[in-house]
Length: 115
Image (cartoon, rainbow, N blue to C red):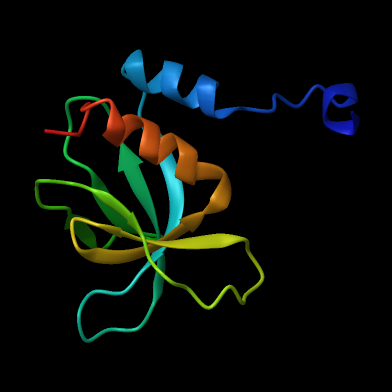
């Protein structure tokens, strides 16, 4: 109610999917550790027809996920300041906000996997 009063647009999974289908570039916060490294903050960039890419917060590091992409929920500690879910994208462990899991599952389930 407060967000509506302040005129802040509250997005839903349906809004995200519609934006994706329209070709918008969507950015999802994530935590990822490449083999042999510690967990690092970054963003997943999801756009129809483009490869799924993770970039570091500063944009200096980029990681392109290999095909085929499949989202698998993996056990996580459940501890931390943010409600995050541990998943594996193409075998790479990633933590994404719980609010974005449904969107990622929807996009990948439709077969609209990034090229």
